[in-house]
Amino acid sequence: MCMKDKVLFILPTLHAGGAENYALRFIRYCGNRVDFHVLAVNTSRGDLHEQFEAAGVTLHYQSIGYFDIRKLWRLRELLKKHQFSAVATFNGNFGGLPLFVARSAGIKRRISLYRRSTNAFGTNRMKLWYNAFAGRLVRRFATVVLSNSEYAFRNFHPGFYGKDSRFSVIPNGIDVAAFNDLPSKSAARKALQLPEEGIIIGHIGRFDPAKNHETIFKVIREVVSLRPDFRFLFCGKNTDSAAFRSQLQEHGVEGWVYCLGLNDDVPLVLRTLDVFYFPSVTEGQPNALIEAMVSGLPVLPSAIPPILEALPSSIHPKLFDPLEVVKVAAKLVSLAENPDEANQFRFEEWARKKFEHTSNFESFYAVLTHGI
Image (cartoon, rainbow, N blue to C red; front, side, top):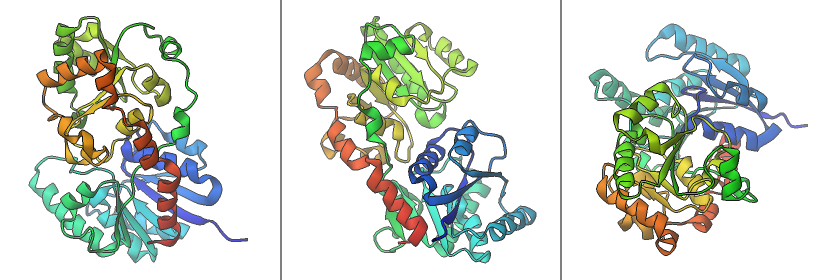
């Protein structure tokens, strides 16, 4: 009987987010084929803790730091104790140092994953220096470097993608079957205690600057000046928080908004909507947008490079700058009112083929168990 591969995923947190959700979905997909361990660099217990445990994962909360020798030694001891067959870090350039430690611990398969296309921090000089240094560590010590977008590689490792065989793009994977056989829109709204009639424009994403809620609030104000009967729905971490509601009040739009907060039943949430709006200012490859396309909704995302990669090229000229307000508001109203135009912004069949999880997850599984 062959022994299962023992794999360690190093994640930023165990809170709901793009990298964390992707890792959890992949682990569930693999079932018992792999003995998974997950190390969260942020040591606070995350929203997804119980879900990872239910998936059979061995969890570790352990800070790594930048140049803390004691923390790096503890990481090395953990790696040597468990004798992992592969280590995969989901921290972009910040995975460089853990990959160096993994090399020193004798781990042969060392994978760096980029789930964002741009840095998640400001222009602090020390962080920028460390970021560049860590990127060089990735190129030195990773046996495989993966991303869900070419743009991430052009940003973090210019000149390497297409020339270095270790670099590869694997698109996100979505279980498209979860979007089949859903209840009617009316039944879905009733289940979520929403009005069964009327137009609802929705957004799914955590309350975070990357998701550009400030612009969404301005767009809501513009839309309801044109159509006061329209409503907006927000779903995602902290979209039901006091801070979020305070922002709605400041913009004078709280009366037109439904706030769901975190909700695990994304297919049901999407089923309640008429149009999906997604004006992110930075992304990796957004699952929320992909799921909206798979669900058959007309989508209006921002025209930033990593999002354009996740869309058919035919729609690129029809999209807007993420900070655009007036034209976007008019377009949302038009998509809600005109079925023929809305159909030009639906990409269900295309998205189901490109992002179907089986082939994409199997590609990642092959990397973890055999390398490229």
